[in-house]
Length: 256
Ligand code: FPP
Image (cartoon, rainbow, N blue to C red; front, side):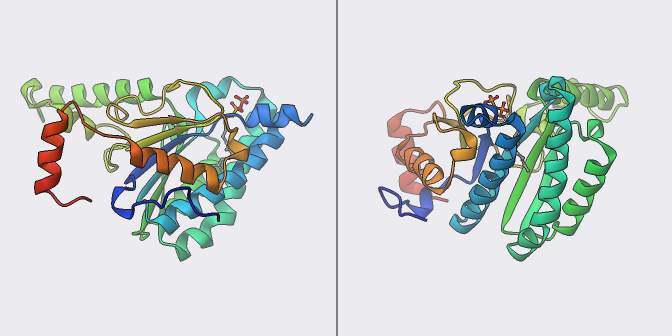
């Protein structure tokens, strides 16, 4: 690992990093390879970034691994992606356990092939004690569907008399999302130069810092991740407040 251009300040690292891992297909095409070879190379970036996040003490990493729109891809590509998921889960289990990484998954997991669902359940159960970092894979995930699903469940609870409409506020609504147990992302990285959210964490990214790099996901390695963290540390997060209010808060509150 090379040193960052500027030293990272441990107290200013993001608690939660989310990543839209884009550009696998283009990476392969530029090399005259099948698209799926890009996904295979992208899996190595997943390993590298997860290791570095864990080493730096980032407590939550969420990866957009398969969107609900991705079901429309060619059947062969979907098959390879599902096989890669399984191989990743098998290969990484011991490293996750050794490094106290808890695996989670968000999305409509019922759409995944049964074998993938089973492997996911087993890995999630086997790593549940992991207290140092939560690695969340977004699989068959779509932000709008997540919100619609939350509204349906919430309406059901109102119809059942468990809640009244007056009880609803943003904090309560969050509890109905897949991400109920996760903090909102502080930093969202998107590779391969597209300036879009692509239906990822629509609710949760309300105040997230966005970082877009032209680097394609299979080329995104330690230096690229460190660069994104450095840029994040130079950002001024105001959450709609004035600079003076932020300075007053920083003077009275310890940073975490
Ligand atoms: C987007 O690139 C990437 C995906 C749809 C899949 C991401 C999968 C991996 C990184 C590999 C396996 C992941 C895990 C967690 C084991 P694209 O195919 O849309 O690229 P393009 O825009 O260049 O066509």
